[in-house]
Image (cartoon, rainbow, N blue to C red; front, side, top):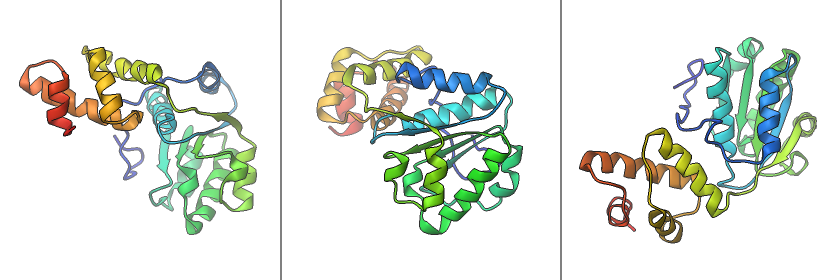
Length: 222
């Protein structure tokens, strides 16, 4: 699914329902959807903390509410035309802002300003506090005005909860022993585990068998 023709596809598994995080962040996002005036949220954390999940989930939910929304990954080039259409948006998600290159920081600064002036809700993710980012001063000043939340990497139980949420949406389940094996021999990173369970789900359906440790060894090469 694309937004306004952007070359970035959203992951349909990223929803607010299966996002595992602290109650403060969930409450803040919910309040944005019910508020009359727009606001900005900045979340930060390391790999596997759920930043991309949250930002894409917000966009999905907004589109379900028939609101105009755009997701930007700063690891990719930001389309110039967004500056001209941002005033028509209801939501803007800016992921991986710490990766934006010097040339694009000015475009992003202009985009951010126009979004704020146009009452667009903005959700941004980065690897650290805004003040610690290697960005132009004016952009960091804007980010510091947002409500800031840290995102901690999920522990094993939270990771299982997130994966189980995704599996339950497909009316499937994974044995506890398989999770333990994946954590030990494959990865504890939620994004990598989601990709792995996608592959296991597809193969298990084709083979008409349950997801097991032998299947994980065969499909994932572990």
